[in-house]
Length: 231
Image 1 (cartoon, rainbow, N blue to C red):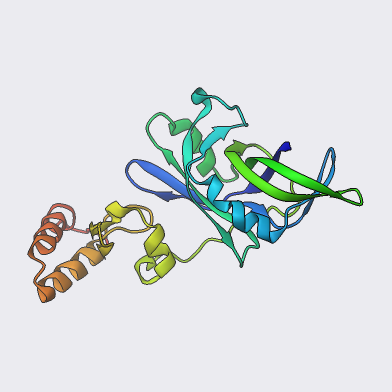
Image 2: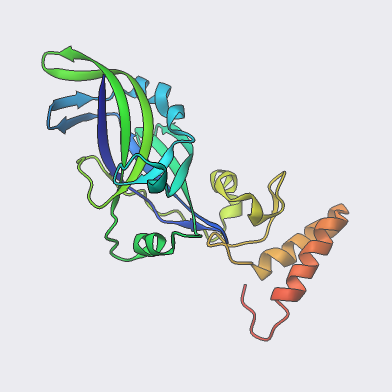
């Protein structure tokens, strides 16, 4: 078995009051050059092992200790489009203000993430082919090493509630009814949208959802009934 580390870039951030989230292509189905030789990660192995990344710690520079934990991997799935594992990581804002500030910078000095994975391989004429993989952690690093690393393109999030994928990814506190993910009232950046609150009041009134209507109205009066309030 081998314990290896592979690096890939991350996408733009999503924010709530308490957390930031971003997606990464954690690893792709490809042949990668490492110092010990070439290693291949077949598509079927990544599909079978993607779930092992969920719940794993987000670290700094692969320092495997409690003190180095800055967040966690909250989701990981194989993407046919990206031909690799797309993972979502979450970092609490409290205590990580400097780190988040560095990640947000343009250009950012923290350009990549890197996975730590334990693999079983078989030799195919000098090529180490992975037959089993288990992810142990994901780390923030300064520079990536894999030529297949690509930053995920930014999606149009101006009307994210109309996109089923973004609606599932959105934090639950973006909704007036978080349990069923109905009545979105925040922008993708986590700001209250007066336009969405008005839509929520209209829809809740139509369907007789009194609690939703009352909450939307209270938020609207608190945040939107100001001269020059923007949607």
